[in-house]
Length: 284
Image (cartoon, rainbow, N blue to C red):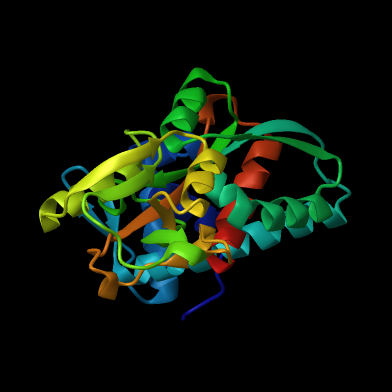
């Protein structure tokens, strides 16, 4: 590496990575597209590798660009937290944060606790719902930002990848009969769609024993031994058992987790929390 990494260059690079379009990124950071292109060239010279590939629809990150993005987010979050702490700039105010139920159990306690240590005056109201409902609230302005499940091929800004797994009660984890009884989320959620598509491809008969956006209701059905469910691996509690392929169930694949912010009215607190999630979630 020919020199140190400039914070301003890294901030511009992250915006380019998140928007995928130089003109849109330039608008958001208040620079001309030409100036932003020069910044990206300078950053590539500093790291000694090409970071972006230009396409007809925008820009894509190279392998080295993907690697730098992980470091850039972490550096920026640490930098901004340090500036806030030592300038007396600990942030206050309130925001509404959306989070799917399974991620709330797996990740939210650590995210909220670590952010409160940096910004103790901040008040974060959490809204738990399935991803489609959170996206709708975000679009209407009812949320400041939200953690969402996305298909890996449909999103650029993936913070974490999660395996989808079949789960059952530990007391009822034997061979399941046909048709396979399923407890699933709402029909428009990724877990529901992945389960049905996977079983259809495998030619396995099934029936929907329970379908609802309520995770607690879904897990109650699973714990009763009446059905099996699909969860992300991080959301599997100790009283549930992941059903391996040896049980005759086909693999479900993976999904991504991303964070989206209501850009038009994003407050400094919302941007700070989004940056914190981007830095912390991948390493939890």
